[in-house]
Length: 176
Image 1 (spheres, rainbow, N blue to C red):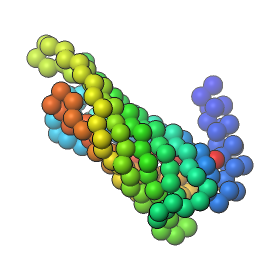
Image 2: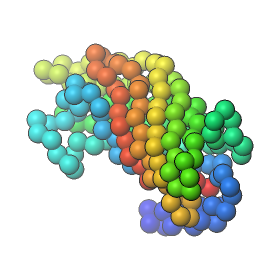
Image 3: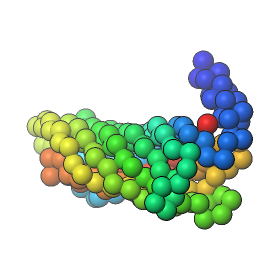
Image 4: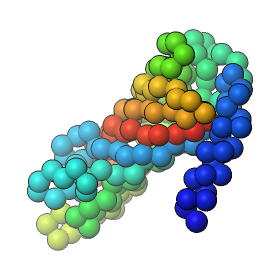
């Protein structure tokens, strides 16, 4: 089932990639909590390449013309990190202008609002908290053939339960 869904999304993106600036985007990848304390609540004692990364998903929509300096995007961004009976969810709604630096590379920057929801277990005690925060996001990416793109980013998303929820991420996406 998952293979069929991926093939349908890729075929749709290839068909719609003829547009100069496609208006919808979807990407998925990994996130990594930037702050040591943020990682400590969801990681085991030692670093692991396979278990210390969370999930990162972005759904975006763009206008067909340039805004201030680049193409404006409204992104809905979700990151989740779990482990050690703890969880940190961060959902962001962001305005990002992506500026093309040629045929492939681009950069982007923008403000946004983040909702952080955490369940953190420390010393046998579970605490829960959720908060809205003002933040921002910076991205750098590369446009690939057939509407695909590779994008890395940094989200400045605030603190919850005394833990910074900022994250870096790497995602593969499709614009259509």
